[in-house]
Length: 287
Ligand SMILES: [Zn+2]
Image (cartoon, rainbow, N blue to C red; front, top):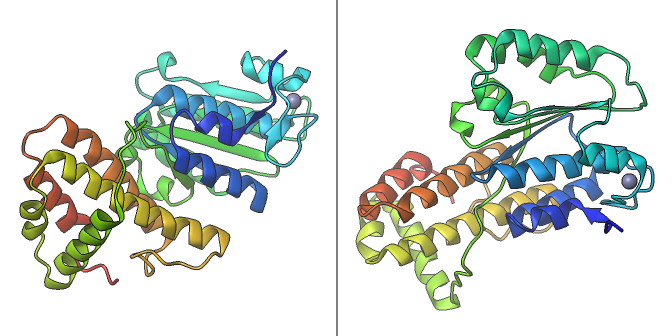
């Protein structure tokens, strides 16, 4: 027998942070009609999107759990539910305006089983600009009970107008258990604050004299951004470095850090890359 599932349990293979964030999100509020899953691991994001569809449709759900056993959950798993559409990456290299019109048309039709309709668009950055513009209006007013879940490995290639209409969740690649000691955390915090206040980012790359340290520093920043996101969403006190940023800004910066982390691992010149990222994304941020 299939085990009951939660969004969190599905997210666990990809990221502890996104797991917590999605679970909290589902328990705390009405689901926004346009969600965006960002991150390098396609399959994880797709499975979580499926989990989200099950969560919305399941006949026997409790809190943020779906049963994975009812006919609805089983048909979503097999991708044969009539009110859940999947536009997977393998179907087309570029999402053209014709495809987007088809999506919009299908989402307008009354649900066959009701009450919702869900459309999962994998790797949404494949939309060319005509397609993205055609999609905008629908994303703005999807209609009652309509939900879009977009996934992407390249959120930087999505139109800002699409990004701003979605609630974004960033999935980090699985870590090999890096641990930041309290001493290191203090060091990174001081280093970052000093760099911001003096607008001198070169000192960060010289102070972190190994690639492994640069990766830890990135994790420290990700964790600070994430604490701020959680605080905004759940109303818990915000003790992170970043208290002045909106959730949209926090998400974009978090995403940039995740992308850089992937590149740093395979690049020798980590200092220069780190410095450039800090200058681009954090210069002038008020702490
Ligand atoms: Zn179910």
